[in-house]
Image (cartoon, rainbow, N blue to C red; front, side):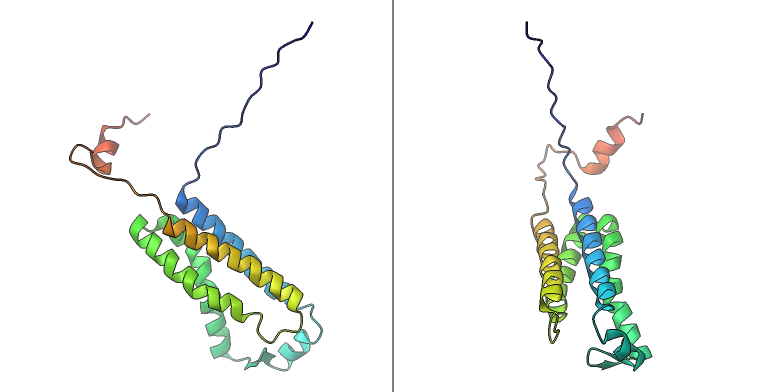
Length: 160
């Protein structure tokens, strides 16, 4: 005799666009940081840093401030993706991700470890493409004369 077993299917909850964007920016920053950290193991890099050089640039307060500003923007995008109003959020993500495509691609220029940097840049570009796609295809609602605005719906929703 066969026993029937109940099968269950996992409930697929929709992921809000804001969460997708924040997760993509977080992943981007992990890649960005780990490529830089692992770069310290490339022969000669530590010696160059101790000699005051990074890539072709002299280490200075100006260089360090510019580097901090460059990395702070995508770090802040994690928070901004969750906090900005939808319209500003969409535009900000489209602009910042578009600007960081060439910034990420620049990181492979002149490097001898092309597989390492190539993989890092490709993964960063994939994440930037996802960010651009999520922001570009941000869902819209159509308001009609009979559709209540969001505040009216919130006011009518009982608090539990």
